[in-house]
Structures are given as structure tokens and as C-alpha cells.
Image (cartoon, rainbow, N blue to C red):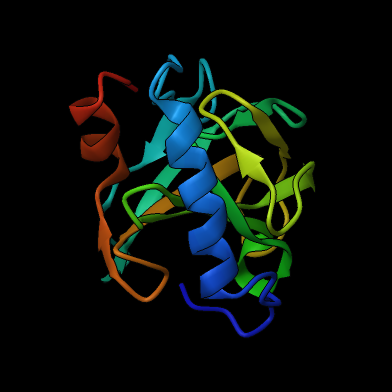
Length: 161
């Protein structure tokens, strides 16, 4: 979901420079991928819902449950986004953009490097939401890229929901 309400945090060139720094430090790090909300319940898949495509996963969890970065990356944006409430956009070293939405709080800022498993936010029910959960999307090749199934992406990297 492209949202004009989310402010651009850093330029693409700044993101690329930060990703180069990240690539230099990530080889020895483990884990490289984690499920963003531990012990969450999958309530909506990457699938058709109410006649339209739901481009992410909805992971229900109690208010305030920690949200973790699924992979290493650089924060592109963090802040209010009308449909998502509060949203965090993180670009990974492969260029894919991970979108985390409906958070009550977020603990990162544009330009920050995060590693898989780092606390980035807490579950909320902000924006267009039916209850406390994380909405998690991945866009292949950048924010304007093709949405892909996060559950498959995670499973391919050994992180199972």
C-alpha cells in the first residue's frame, strides 16, 4: 500500500550507502532472518480478502508485544501512515522493502541500520485495523516493487510462522 502520508526519510543513495555498510558487517551474524512477532497467530494470509488482494500477513498478538526486524537492513521511513497507523519501512541487502504496520510505538528512525531480531516497534491497532496485530509486507526490489508472500520469504530462510 503506497501511502502519501508516510514521509520520505532518506534518499535512495543514502540507503545504498548504509546497505553497503551493513553488507560488510553481516557475514558473521546469526540469525539472518526471524519471524517479526514471536508467538503470534496468523489471522490473514497473503491472499484475496473481501474481493481484493491482501498484500501481506496479519499477525495477531497482544498490544505492546515486541516487533522485531525480520532481517538486516536500513530504515527508509518510520512514522505515521494513514492506513497503517504507524509504519516502518526497512530495505534489506537484497533491495527488498519490508513494511511493518499498525504499530502503537516504533523505536527506529530513518537511516538507522537494524539487524535481524532487533526490536523496532510494538504491536498496536493504529490506522485501519480490526484489532492488535502486525501487518507485514515485502516488496521485491524496492517500495514500488511487486508484493511477495512474506510467509514464503520467511520459510525460504528458515523462519516459520
